[in-house]
Image (cartoon, rainbow, N blue to C red):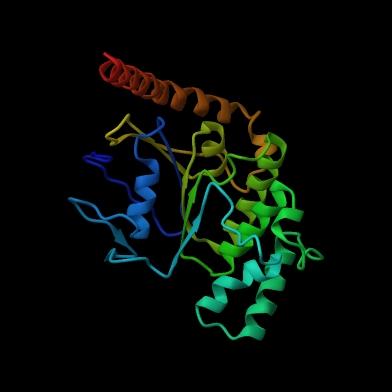
Length: 250
């Protein structure tokens, strides 16, 4: 199955890019190509100017579900990456303690994932990712399982951490408002096999407070414009899916 076709996307250093499109159009495939977990059958993927061959050590990946080891404590989860990369144990634990403080989890170091709320687990996941100082951060619907209030808090937390790190971010989401609130630029993909339909610069000043900018007139105008573009692809994707179901059941 062809997931992407005639697809071109560029992310500048320190840029926050969001990717939206219909379900199954190839958004996650895009991330897998950047990580090296998938290989393009044609064309080329370049990271920091060089072709992708395997998993680049400068890339961090935040998943939709928690990538926490349930048998490890909070601090042991956060320290796993540095230890794997060869950081001395004492230095790694000192660094993990600092990162847990940055995500407001001081005092929870010895707890286990099952003892944390969904929002707290996401904070652990952010510390787990940022502690490795990624140059590129790939995020595949990382907050989709959270309730609305917790998600807004996590948006502000992510923007704060990203602003300090200045990593390049590719953020995949089904939530258009989330994409606009976070990103410098929003890519709209067509129904599969996906290509880039439109690219929208988000000219809302930073720093942003996500809970407030949703009521800004400029935010509402951008949302309306992009939704009209995206809506056509969502409807086309739904029609294609109905046709496939009819073909299978005929």
